Length: 71
Image (cartoon, rainbow, N blue to C red):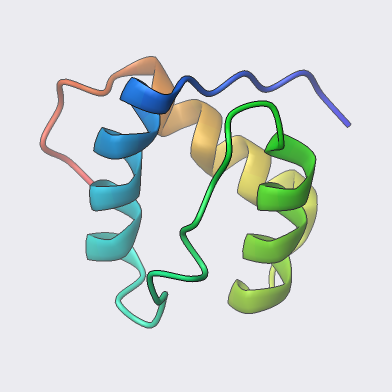
């Protein structure tokens, strides 16, 4: 699995973007503790019925431009 580092500050913004893009995600689906990226990716992949590679790609893409309002 690729190295994906998400800080608590970045996660707050990313969480909002993900909840807008995937409105089926609940607060518990979007729960994240810093340093537990693998668990987050696996949980999101299962919940979204996608591969872990897709989730990593999506998270990386959103992390690259957090200031953007796009989802």
